[in-house]
Length: 122
Length: 446
Image 1 (cartoon, rainbow over the protein chains, first blue to last red):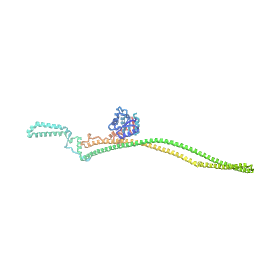
Image 2: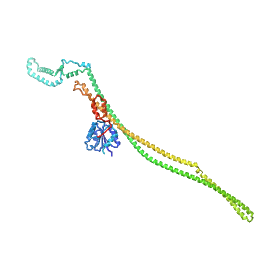
Image 3: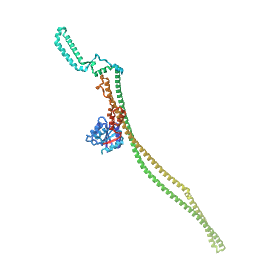
Image 4: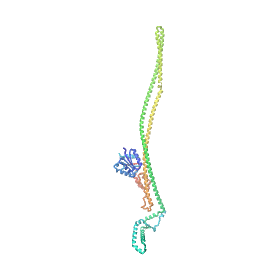
């Protein structure tokens, strides 16, 4: 059975690019445009990994990260931050909030896929 | 500037200035004081003044007393709240100067400045609208490119699958073809063996026919011998008949025998002639029957034809192998190219991330424009405000480094540093730079 990955990004083009790369590799994909939208789409189904942008409207990536760590169903779901933000302070903020990896845009799809393979839940 | 200075040089002698805020504060108190004073005056002095001076009507009297009292109070108020210009503070003097400086030129300049601020705000709004339009259009274009690239990718995937299927079928065909070629080669070997055997048999037949012909020739000699014997027998019978005739009656029976022997001799000669003729005919017939088959040239032609057939079959096999080889090469090349195209499509899709990065950079400019607008709005207010620009009035300068709080990319910080180098707080930029060693395209695992 294919594993499910959620991509959260306010940019439709980024969502599409990531989605295509993931689907070609055999993953199922759920798309959300911000943290709030993502929380609305997490209805108890198994999600093996989450890719999340940092700077988003409504609910930013760090707030979403903090929120998801309070959710019993998804607290152990690995989260990779996918962002243009490259400041060390921000990275540490993400780490403290529970992110497993920090990928700086623009990224190469194969690098992103390699990071996913390392962290995705069995 | 000199004109401006001349315009604001004024004399303060004999001028009073009302402290309006002070006046506003004490005015209710003085109104109350006027009312009380008037009432007391009317109450205590009304009759005395009435008797002493004028027999006015009550209303006029009262008004007179009100005016007198109000005049006195007004004088007191002015005395308390107004100050001679010569005695005003520096700040108040600056206010006067500020008022007096509202010359025609200054008004024109202020007007122009306000107009510029207005234009700048409009220009900013226009720039923002254009930038937002660019973001929107590039976003749509990026989505269209992604959709088209995805379509191409799907087609390429389909093509790769078809090619893989064709490759598989081609492999099967190649196997079958190889088997056919092998079988053809074996058939050719068998055919060659058969041809060789047949040629050998023909050679043997040839030898046997020659031997038979030779044997027939030797039989002709036997026929000649028989004929010779027959001739000699005939001559003997003739001599016997002569001798029988000489013997007379005694030799009559012998003469009959001699005649019969002679007759047999003639028949024998005749039979020998017929046998010789038959043998000669048979030998000629054998030679005639084998002439074509025994001809060396015919055998060589057959051999050549078989050789040609073999060559053609070999060529056919080789051509098929070559064709199969080319077919495989084409399939492999197309497959490699298809995979390259698929890879390029993924790279193209990855490059579309730059649209998102550009969008964020444009959004940063829009935010900066909004900040500048707020600053301009403040400037506009203070330019038109008729108060001196002291500490309460001076708005803080626009801090270009304040934009740093919007930056999310190392590149943005680098550009800021490069563009503002020498003009701004380098320490701040460097401090920010210290924590940002990223070159992009990197992954950090926690």
